[in-house]
Image (cartoon, rainbow, N blue to C red; front, side):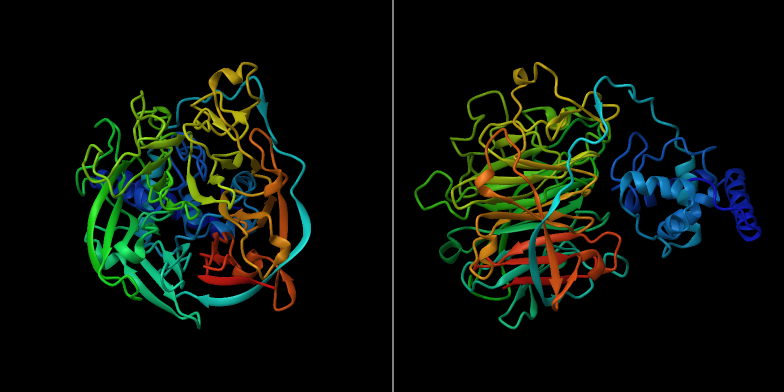
Length: 561
C-alpha cells in the first residue's frame, strides 16, 4: 500500500480523499466515524488483518504518514486493479503474501471513509525481533514436482450462489449419508445439501433456520463448520453439526480471562433425527459444548468419527473435534493454545453418549491422555494452529492437516497425547519470537528435550498458502491413486499426493503434484474458476471416489477414470 501512480486525475482524486479525511478529523462526529470504522473492520477485514503483526495479510498499524487516504480508498475498492497496475506497495505485498484481497467496492463511500479513518488512527505495533539468530528464508526445497499423473475431472454440479460477492458460495465439506449413501455437501453460509443419483441438490438441513443465533459473518471459516453422522446413525439417528454464534450468545463451556476479547462462539450440537432415512432432516437438538474464540479465524473446522473403528473397539462412537487457536497467537495471546488445560489449538476426543464432562452433556473417554493427569480431559493431541481436516487410513493412521502461519503447511500422523508444536514450532522449524511469528528458524540443538512431534509431509509458501486435507484413495475407478493420500492447497488450487508407504514418524514423505484435465484438455483450478483465490476443497463419496470443489464459483467435479 503506497502512493498511487501520479496522474492529473489520480492527483485530484487523492486530494479529494485527503480533504475528506481532514473534514472527518475536524468533525465533532469523528469519534463516531472511527467507531463505525472499527465495526466495519471487525466484520470485513479482521479475518486477515490486525494491528500487531502480519497474518493472512499485512498488519495495518502505523500506516498514517506511510500511505495516504486515497491509496487505502482505492486499495479497499479494488486491490487486484492496483496489483495489476504494478502500484509499488500493492504489488510488493502481493509478492510477499501471495494472495489477492477481494474487492470491497460494494461498500458505500461513507463506509470506506470510516474504514480508512479507523485504520489510519491505529498506532504502529511494538518493534519485532527481526534480527533473529537462525532465520530461514526458504524453509523447504526443492519445489514440488509434477508426478506425471493426470486427474480427469467431470463436472457434477454448480451449487447455488449464497453470496452476492466473491466467493459466490462457501462449499466447504463433503460427507456421506450412512443409509442412502448419497453425498452431502455443506456450505458455510448454512445450507447442507444432499445430492441424488442425478447429482441434483436438495437442502438436507438449513442452519440459518435451525439456529436462531446462527452467524456466518465475519466470513473466512465462520458459519456451518462441519457435520458428522454417528456410526450407529441407522439405529440411533444421531447427527452432529458445528456452527458459529455471536459472542455472549450463551455461557461458554470453554472461556478465557475477561480481559481477552471474544469474537465468536463455536457450538457443537447433537440432533436426534426423526426419520434417519429421510432426505430432509428433522429432529430435536441439544447442545453438546460451546467454545469462545478470540477471532473468527482458526475455529472449529472439523468433527469426525473414525470410519474404520469397529463396534466394541476403543474408538467406536467417539467424536473427534479439531479446534484451532482462534487467531489468539496473532492477537498476542500465545499462552491460549500453548496451555495444556485449554481447549484451543487441540484435537479433542469425546463420547457424545456419555455424561461425565463438566457440563454433563458428553462423556470423557477414559483412555484420553490427560485423564487423571495435569491437562484437559477432552484433549487427544495438541500443538495445532488450525487442524482443518481429520481423516483415517485403512491401516488405522489418523492424518490431520494443519494450516500454518507464514512459512509452513503441514500434515501430521496424529497420535494420542502428542504435541505438534504450535505456537513454538511451525512444521519442522522453530518460532523464536512471539512478537514476530512470521519467521522461522532451525530447531535448537536441545530440541528433543521439548518432546514435540513433527509432520510427515510439509510444504512452504513458495508452493501454496494453505493446506487442505484429503483422503486415502479407496475407490476403484482410478487405480493409479491406490496407496496414495490425496490432498491439496486452498488458495492456488493445486492438488497433491503422498505415497502412504513412505509415511514414517519423524520423516518427510515426498509430495507430488497431480495435473488436471477437463473435457480432455489440460487445465488448472485457477483457470477454471478465473479467480485469484480458488478456495479448493476435496471430498470422498461412499465408494471412495474423490471430488474436487471450488468455493469461489461453487463447482463440484468428480475424479473419473
